[in-house]
Structures are given as C-alpha cells and as structure tokens.
Image (spheres, rainbow, N blue to C red):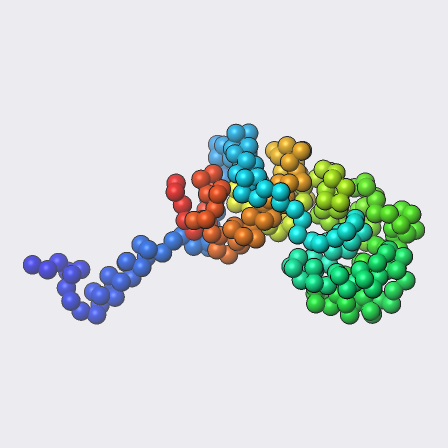
Amino acid sequence: MLSKTAMPGKTAAKKSTKKSAAKATPAKSTIKPRKATAASRKQALAPERIQTILDLLAAAYPGAECALIHKDAWQLLVATILSAQCTDARVNMVTPVLFKTYPTPADMAAAPIDEIKEIIRTTGFYNNKAKSIQGAAKKILTDFHGKVPRKMEELLTVPGAARKTANVVLGVAYGLAVGVVVDTHVLRLSRRLGLTTETTPEKVEQDLMKIIPKDRWIAFSHELIHHGRLICIARKPRCVDCSLEKVCNSGDKTWSTH
C-alpha cells in the first residue's frame, strides 16, 4: 500500500519537492548571529584560538599587502582618501593620471579644484574628496614641511585622514604599528569570528588591539581584507572554501562542518 506522501498527484508532488529543496538549501546569510554568552565569548577570545586564526590567515595570504598602488606616503594618503566608498581597483585606475598631473603636495595645493574633481570623478563623492586631498596638501605644506607626518596625533589633523586612513599610511608607508586598520571587511569579519561584538570601527579597533599581538597588527588587517574580498563575502560568505571555517561559529554561515 502506498503511503500518503507517496500518493500520486500535484499536491503531494509539490510538497515532496519543497521538502527536498529545503533539505538541500544551505543556511542563508540572513540567519541572525548566535547570541554570545560569557562562556562563548571567553572561548572565542582564547589565546590558542586567536593564534590559530592568525596562523591560518598567514598561510592563506602569505605576504599580503595593501592593494592601493603608490610610490610614497603622500600617494598612499591620497589613494586611501579616494578609496572611501570606492574599490581599490577603481582608485588604481585614477591615481596614475592624478599623480602625473600633480605629483607633489605643492602641485596638488596649487591645482584648480575643478581639475582635481574631474580626474577623480569616477571614485564617487568627488567634491568632498577633492577638497580633502587639496586640504591635506596644504596642511602638509604649512605644518609638516611637505612631508606626511609619522605620528598618529599629527596625521589625524590632516583633512581626510581619519583613524583608518592614518593607520593605513603609518602601517604601510612607514611600517609603524600604531593601530589596526578597520575597514568594512575587517569590521564584518571580526564580528563573524567573534573577536568583537562592537559595531563601530573605533571600538572594534580597540578590541582587536587587545587580542592581536602588536607585531601582527599590520599584516592581520591586510590578510583579513583579502579574506573578506575573496571568501568571506558580505551577503553570501563562501564558507565551503574558507580556511577559517572550522574555527568560525558565525550564525550566518552558508556551510558548516560543526
């Protein structure tokens, strides 16, 4: 005798198809993150787990570097300002023309603002970015003898140089580990990995500085940014290809071994 679920008919067939599809569909990224408990937070921040994450990232992205093409600290500062709400690839298409036309801070400070806007137009928000770039050039000329400063407190006085930008310049151009670069990828992945529960870049950076060894601050940011672009994508992370999957307990995983 045929069971009810095996009875022929459109209704039964549809129900069966839906059930099969439900079983085959991986977890969606819209699933709410698991609520962290004191015990789970302690486990997530255990030194052994942190070291495992660092080792896996280093192995997956050996020699990871900043994707913004530059020749010196000034070019990196400008490129980082332009990278706000814009891809590094697009910035790298714009900066060769910009630096050929206005190669030094003095040239940029004296440039017609409308010409700067036209060159950087495709990076978006070009009005504000042009003002920031020219303002940065003038500030560096008048207060720092034409050189991008090496101190965080000084760099933060430069137009367009918020803490993330300052960390990029200090870490990449000068090799100074003053903080951790927290862009959209680092913020997202740090939360997914349970390294922080904060939601603002400033607070996330403070949490990361407490648990990541200082000699790994610069490389860690680059590695996490690469991982966020290639694997741990915002809407649909590629968990099946992730080298960190076994140590990740995020609630929006699309595939899991545990």
